[in-house]
Length: 195
Ligand code: SF4
Image (cartoon, rainbow, N blue to C red; front, side, top):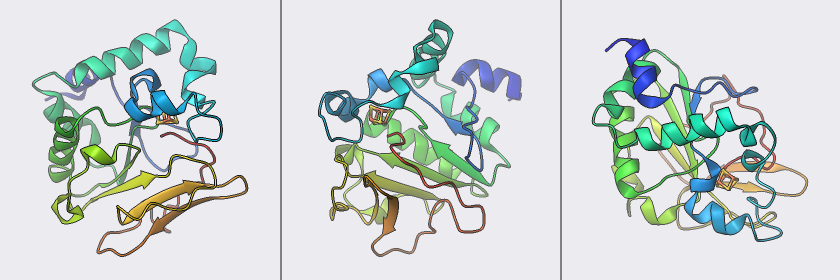
């Protein structure tokens, strides 16, 4: 598949500033848990940056809506593999979050078909994660984000991220997995970053 066709199918990748590689974003309004948390003061989603500023421009909103719709395209996996191939790092959902267990399964397939890429997926959707972290692709790190600012890391998943009012941390409790991003091409610390 040509990259041009892959971009048409998927809506294309995003290029968040301060990140070591490309990303893929979905509309924050479609976040399942996040849409509830935006109304909860003290939560990480309260005042979500992806619901403000340029994200409210009609062209950006349309592009995000197209990406959400594209998840159903029968060649979405092929197209994402085409776009990610050769990238050392890939961040899933610089805005937006997992939509379903099926959506995560599609992402697993993309990861399995891009073994040279280290994938990083933060999420608030524990219900869509597999019971055992051993079943996820070896080149994918899923970080389960605590919902509230200053909340301790969750214990139900080995890779976590938290937001404090002073610092942001990622924690790997125990794992065979690489940290994502690694110390070699370190992503910036994130303060109130989605999801
Ligand atoms: S912070 Fe992330 S999870 Fe929360 S609403 Fe915004 S995009 Fe969604």
